[in-house]
Length: 237
Image 1 (cartoon, rainbow, N blue to C red):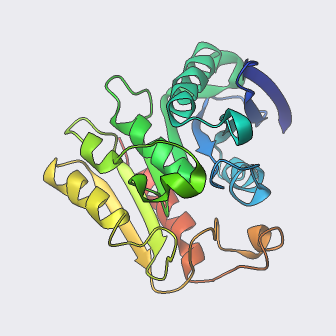
Image 2 (image 1 turned 90 degrees about the horizontal axis):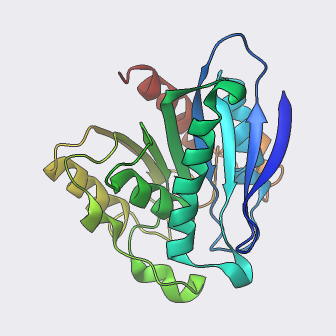
């Protein structure tokens, strides 16, 4: 495995962490958007998710979008397009199949991933949303001005896999995941939804590997989202 970090936007402190498997064939790729309310990113939903996807024969990329004093929702959205442009331009060197690159976002990163998956001309072939923020309910807490991404959904929105927990006190299912999946359903967008009876917001992979850097938060049932997601990804065209 090779690792390198490139700067996409020096002014806005935007970087792309590249986790690259040495392979003889081009692999699918996933762009990972961590959560964290636009505060410093944590291993639980960045590096450790990337390394886990690597074990499943994916090339993995973690987008460090603008945070802290640089935080800006629109700039963060723009940085996703910049990241995809870079990856696709360098697909041969990165040994990634440009026709099989998708996006995964957690919490605030899930809102950004959803927005990008709804953009006209999006280059993401799939979207995975983990306990996503969907509307502006947390804008004051995060210090940004976002949007209700459920209103962005069209028939051309990227096929989507969504997971979360019933006991999510930060981004409650009924206020976030439910309206987004309703919009996907109404627009006939292929999607799969898993809402677990245990686990919670910020659980990431929900296993011991992320728990040791995430306050010992693990849940064997919630952790099933990852193998279920892989099954779903494998059946996509």
